[in-house]
Image 1: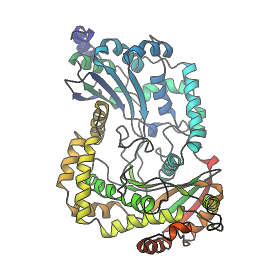
Image 2: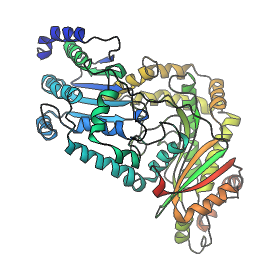
Image 3: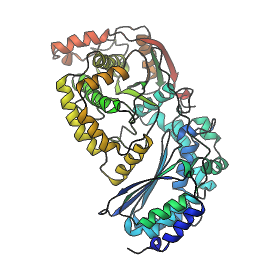
Image 4: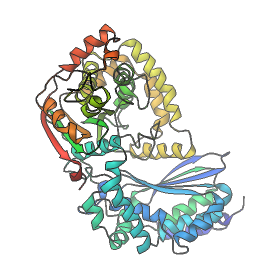
Amino acid sequence: MKSIFSRLLLTAALSTGAVASTRAAEVVELRQPNASKVVVKLQFRNGSAADPVGKEGLTFLTSQLVTAGGTKAMTAAQLKDFLYPMAVSYYATTDKEVTTFTFEFHRDFIDKFYPVLQGLMLTPTFTQEDFDRLKSNQLNYVDQVIRASSDEDYSKFALEDQLFRGTRYQHMTRGTTAGVRSLTLADVQAYYPAAFGRDNLTIGVAGNYPTAFLQKLKADLDKLPQSTAKPVIPALAASKGIKVEIISKPDALGSAVYAGFPIQATRASNDFAALMVANSWLGEHRKSYGKLYDKIRTTRSMNYGDYSYIEWYENGGANMLPVPGVPRHANYASIWLRPVQIAEGLRKQYPTELGDLKVGHGAFAFRLAVREMDNLVKNGMSPADFELTRTFLRSYVKLYGTTPAKQLGFLLDSKFYGRKDWLKEVDGQLAKLTLADVNKAIRQNWQVQNMFVTIVTDDSEAQPLADVLKQNLPSPMSYAKVVSEGLPKEVVAEDAQVATYKLNVTDVKIVDTKDTFK
């Protein structure tokens, strides 16, 4: 296929030489000769952890303004009309340490689309109109949407606020109320060249593309300046005991629980594959066979789902599988209990049987989950559970990269962690694992004595729940009579043990929902 890139091959090479730098962008290629689509991912090592103090949310807003704005050649509205017939897709994602721009287009439109890609990255317009619109949306999310749309996500972001407190990881990627309000167009215009440079860029390209296309892309992006804004990676400190923050909000339908603690293992570590096995057995995301799911949802019908994690799980409410683009050096393990019922709701549902109930299922569910993790730390996995879970995972991880964009994304993440191709490597790691490896990794990385806990609940539940946790009072499970009469004896016996299971709670604090993410 002859294209402008064939004609510009020599020019591209000369351009590369003209602006060559010893700190040029790195490149990851995924050649797919039979592919009809070309995917370009530009991953910058900045992320929200690079936000200047007082300007929390600047990285996110800048990246969104690049992809939702115009170029020197076309306005945002003109771009929309120009690109519609090509079915082009492009967007930006920001996490703690990286920001990734993704461009997906049919290979037949390489010539036609490339000037747009080039313009967005090298000559974005950053108009006041686009800035005002995107800033308003971002502020609305920080001020309103996160508190109102999903208590599950609310609890996750609130836990990170607590776990990373005092570090540049603390704030949401979208920022804080004060940070977003302070942002100006001048901030974005100054920040883009400072944070999005050729030296902190990794270029990823997948599909069936001409060599000249990649050379031109590299040459053009090498015109980006050297970056000066860098993410600040926190050294995480373990909690002293179990520290609980209960977020009190009006009209919450349940208690959403998210608990976590720092761990050293990341995908860069060989221990990570061993932890994947333990984690999958305890609570693989959106899977019904996990121990937490079985005990809390299946056996007791307490909520929608209960899962565990050994790294950040992006958009867990929508994604069934882990997605790339969120690699981090600072890591933590966590337990996510989707909302369980509060006393007010149970009293209304069963006025005769539970009319005097003071506290709902939050304390019991949390105790049960911690107890299950504690049992795993103390006793390890059984040989049968180990073999079955490892077999599942060796098949499951092959589903992570089901599209060229995901495959390329995981390759970029692999480079972040110092690996060549983590998706391929992890299968070999799993194959070599022994039960002893997994149980050793559990003992070295997991514990239940020191953790941070965030519970988003109704304002009627906050104080009673705080009293139970702070004083380590018994929290018996509450059933309707028709349910309790049919419970197996082993469940009744376990309920009694869970109700009095001692938690190493050292601090409980109630936070008004209006005071979060400020």
